[in-house]
Image (cartoon, rainbow, N blue to C red; front, side):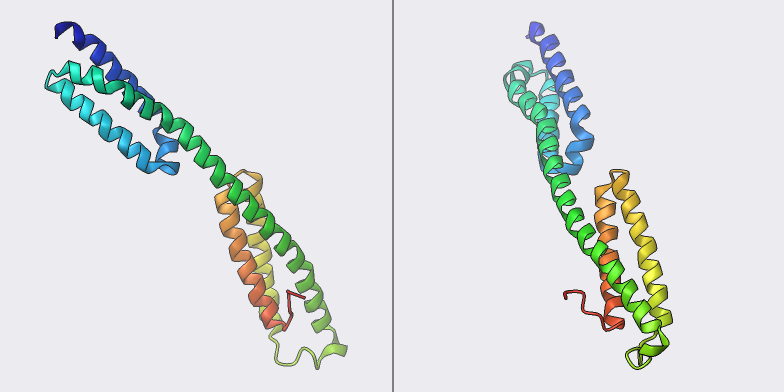
Length: 177
């Protein structure tokens, strides 16, 4: 029993270090697995505290394997999330890049005196301000993307697309066309 204490203690320390090293990414991407590994580690520590070193030595390999899997699972999940965000960004960037010149052209068209009839009932000043705000927000989305913050970039680009659609509706512009 005495001879099992040191190896049991070392195994717990190794598992603890492995869980700690993986915990930041695991908490974001595989929180259930992290909780499971932490619970199993807690069980081993409790067995150690009861001086049941044989139980620690018996259970530790499976818990160590689960702890080691945390980093791999978190990395795989992170890759999936980033790929999905990148795909979303690509679609949003394509849409917004098409919307911006279409809306600018429509505002230029409506602001000409010869198109006064087409501009009737449209608040061009408000539309221009809303367009400027959306354009500014688009710059922030592009900066977030350039900085590698895909989550913020996609979220902001989604807001931009919504705002531009509202401006287009105000201008009686069909963006689908």
